[in-house]
Length: 285
View 1: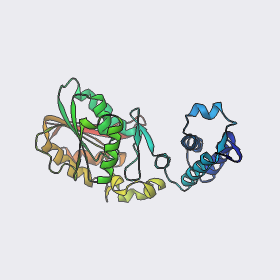
View 2: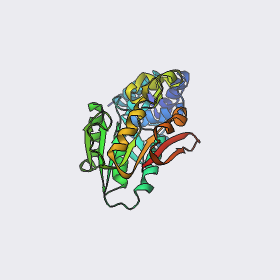
View 3: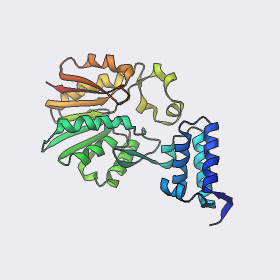
View 4: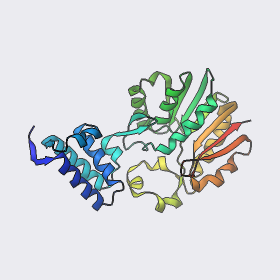
């Protein structure tokens, strides 16, 4: 395959950096590197070891398309189709919310509670990419996990990710509105990263999230509490005695969330590394 005007890797990176900065894309250098690695199907070490590599026509066109999309605000994860979570690579499409590092705090909260339990049943509510269910399946080999989502397209993505990590046999995928149809007293854990942004906060949400990520996975309703308000009592019914709910929240709703846990035990809110309330958890007494 021929080259286009002999554009080197170094020149392509510099050009992309300038365009991304002009478009006010945050972390422009990181984005430029990610998109170039995507276009060349290489790792970061290759970028810096071969700055004089001349892009082929195919590589150049793929890179141009990726940079153009990113300057329009399309998230890099939707361009490359990938995002890392819990040390694993996940397929990402515009049908699912992009996994965030903050959501790993849910996994960190569940694992000590699961301890040495030999058999346990977990529901991941609003599974999206399947990242939570798959991470828990990896870390808890004895667990049977049900991954629930109202979106059939999201479940398709989650199934693909589970198969890629050879955990498809460990996870049941169910299309459902929250825990509808789940047997009472059947679960040890309900884990969820539910929609928790209020429509009144729309002007505070990143523009690329508003434009490109699934709205129903971001916004819960006017206040941001609407989905949690439904999920908490459903979880109480579905959990065994002593079972736990562990869910992601935001600073905006942290003070209000506790109002839904009157009959629960050991309610706790944990903060992330930036001291932002991130995880709400409680035990069925």
